[in-house]
Length: 415
Image (cartoon, rainbow, N blue to C red; front, side, top):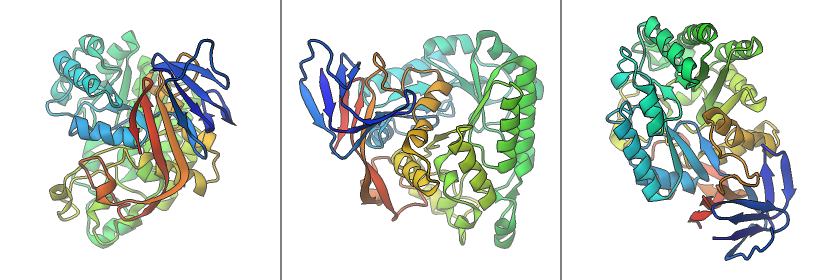
């Protein structure tokens, strides 16, 4: 289908474009910007007057408990590509499981799914997975998700192997023993509430270990979900020293801190935990300057998993449908131009994943998000497409609403 999108403000961070211009799509890819290409006969015209046209958002981490509902949530949030962590049930450590996930997602025809393979068999941290076979099946990187590797030599061997084939390694930097039994940031709030704390050094010790091994092996390393100012400082220094490392932060960590736990609000339980206001500010700076990409860390949890005492509640929040409005709120509060803010959820994560998405350059996949940046809406359980209704932002008024999402030149969501 040939589609023209007219009268909108087109923002493409990768190309540095922020201007009122039209977009032309054909054969599932971007055909032209500004003027229609030769012999272009639109079969549909989308009027984006008063709205922003940008590349579809790329989410570095979204758990897909129910594939159809969560991918529907993704496109409703303008997300056209999601990386799926390997801690599914069963974990993504066999090619057949990966192929089945890819086939099912393609059959649904919603957001694109990019599987992250298990770094070790069964995520047990003992024997390396068959990375070559998993890559052939569709995996684009390898991770332990939240599962630790106790034996540092196993991690060293994994990085050596990955470096040989230029596979990317994604790690959640948290030392198991330092974080063991912790449920909140080890600080004043946790002490007052009598909650077991997770110290910042649980993150920095793990980061330091991973960076040393990455430097030793030359592996491409991505550190997922940084939560602290010292953690950011370590990554900044490592990049300055030439280590091949990237990182991301979760969108809720840019807005919340330990005080948002309130009086044991389980909706504010996250892993890694919400830390101090100064940690949050450091994460904001890291994202603003482009050191860190931003992800939703979408973790749908049912009501039973949250209606428990804080220490027993499951961590995480629904995020796919909130990624864009929370990004816009962060950009407004920090006076960051939309061109830079949108880079953190489009071209930056696409580059980390090594995929074509994240830009509207001619010839790229026609994955497009069209949204009204100012349109208000109230977050209620009824408006969420995800099965997970767990979020500390429930009841808030949001600004920024997706009107149309296209994947491969097909309209997959519109209001």
